[in-house]
Amino acid sequence: GQNIDQPTEMTATEGAIVQINCTYQTSGFNGLFWYQQHAGEAPTFLSYNVLDGLEEKGRFSSFLSRSKGYSYLLLKELQMKDSASYLCAVPSGGYQKVTFGTGTKLQVIP
Amino acid sequence: DTGVSQDPRHKITKRGQNVTFRCDPISEHNRLYWYRQTLGQGPEFLTYFQNEAQLEKSRLLSDRFSAERPKGSFSTLEIQRTEQGDSAMYLCASNPGQGAGRDTQYFGPGTRLTVL
View 1 (tube, rainbow over the protein chains, first blue to last red):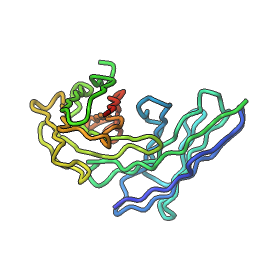
View 2 (cartoon, rainbow over the protein chains, first blue to last red; view 1 turned 90 degrees about the vertical axis):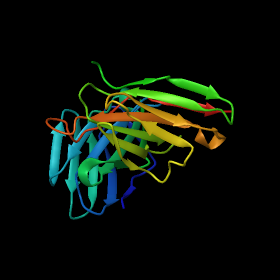
View 3 (spheres, rainbow over the protein chains, first blue to last red; view 1 turned 180 degrees about the vertical axis):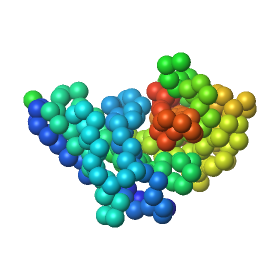
C-alpha cells in the first residue's frame, strides 16, 4: 500500500521562499503529484515528477528522490494568494487511483 | 468544455434520506474517479471507472454507496440511508488515460454534503 507523510501546517512571509516536504512509501513507483487546494475549492494540479531531480515551473519547483522516497515543493516569491493546502499524492499501478497525503496548510503572512 | 462539473454543489439532507450526485467529466476523458474529503484531510479514493466499467472500489465504500457510469460519460454517486458520518466533500476527477496529461487528474468543484 501507500503511505504519505507531510507537515500539517507551515507559515511563511510574503516574498520569501518556502519548502514543503513529503516522504512516501509505496509498493511500486508511478510518479508523484503535487496539488494546490484553496479552502472550499477542488485540488488543482501543480506538478508531476517521475524522474529524480528538480523540475521548475515559474515560481513553483518540485524535487524528487526515488531512492529516498522523498519529494519537496518549493515556492518562491511567496504571494498572499499562495495561502492554501498543498497535497502530495502518489498513484498506484496503472494510475487507477491516487493516494493523497493529508496536505500541508500554508499560511502566507505580510 | 471548461472542465469537470458536479451537481449539486451543496446538499443538506436529513439522516436516513437517499442522495444522488452527478459528475460530468471533461469530454473524451475515459477515466473517472470519485473521492471523499473531510476537513483537514486529503481526498480519499472511493471508486474508479474506465469508460462504463467500474474497475476498482475502495473498502471505504459501504453497501450504502453505489456509483454508475452507464454510457461511459457522466457518472452518478448514490448514498442510501445517509448517516452523519457521510458528511463530507465528494470530489469527482477525470483524466484522458492517454496522450498529454494522461497521468493528471482534473478535479471538479465538488459536492458538499451535510447530513443533519
